[in-house]
Amino acid sequence: MEKNALISRRSAGSAVMILALCAAAGCVPDGGAIRDSPPLAVEPEARKTEPVSPAVRPLPPVLSFEEAVDSAAHAVFTAAPAANEHIDVVIDPLIDGVTGYQSKATRNIQDRITALVKRDFPAYSVQRITPASLKKQPRVLIGTFTPVNALGKSSGQRESFWFCLVLLDLKSAKVIAKSVARVRMGDPDATPTSAFDDSPVWTDDVQLRAYVAACQGSSVDDPIKPEYLAGLYAAALISEAGDAYDERRYAEALDLYSTARKLPAGDQLRVYNGIYLSLTKLKRTDQAVAAFRDLVNYGLRNRRLAVKFLFRPGSVRFVSDTSISATYGMWLQQIATLAALGPVCLQITGHTSPTGPAAMNESLSLLRAEYVQSQLESDEPRLKKRTVAAGIGSRENLIGTGRDDATDMLDRRVELKPIEPCG
Image (tube, rainbow, N blue to C red; front, side, top):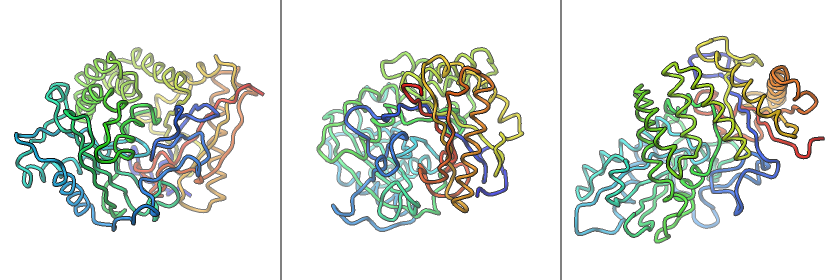
């Protein structure tokens, strides 16, 4: 079972619960799941994909974090076609290939690559990703950093990180270089950055899938995925907004997130999360409630909603620290009210990390699902007899490292799926 020490806001042994509303038929648009971006509504073996197939080529060796980053970066910039002029390159912030989260590890990768390029590839100049820098049609570096098992798959017990690095050329609209590496599990710090750690809602939305496809699903000389290109300017604003939020410049973050929302690709989860978080930090309570409602409506429009709750270690009760849990009542009320408006029943399924005996974890996951069930039904009586609870322990982990800390909090969740027709 989960460790019995609550160290910090996203601490070891903290139990995080996700409420996910997802269509029973699955959450991925026609065409199937994007590699390393599995829809939660599908059975785990059906939804899990891998960054590489051992039948196609042998897996690269497991390296230290520094060795892997340096090796992959050198390979990409060496393989890229030379240019007759100075070359600008921007980094679209790297993400976890399953959750879409940025972390201390992905930030460290970006810092290390920036220093390496300055030292070893003087023809390049690394610029911040902004709408202004994108207008110059630079080369764009993207990457995913994903926990995988011994076969390179994002399922089962994870034993290393799969690192994919891709260089895109906006002038030719093509993939011009790609490299992969594996990183020793214990080396990187995969703790999410503040903007992702604080976000109340999680899901793998359209822009996340587009980014992962552009990295994991591309080969050299392929055209850049049009879905990725369509969201690039919004991504630049969101990157600036995330930096501002992490640096506690909340008014600036709110302005940037709100500007991104007005773009054609601005209807995405990171924007709604950012607006809600910034308003909360600025203590604009009424506006924050409305922003959370927008988050719920976003999930309902896309047939998937995920909201994170932090539980006491080994318990079915929310953490007692009101600086963390004070908003949970409002979250539940908004979710219950909007869920009750539709003619659907809800299947509520609990999950845990893989730490400890499987039977105990399945029991705990069921109890937490039942606790959320009771809270929703208490807030909205119309949901009574329209919900069913279940617990499956750790059989459908998204991260699977078993660290029981902020890095694998999405493994400790409860998912809600609409059942239509009801009954």
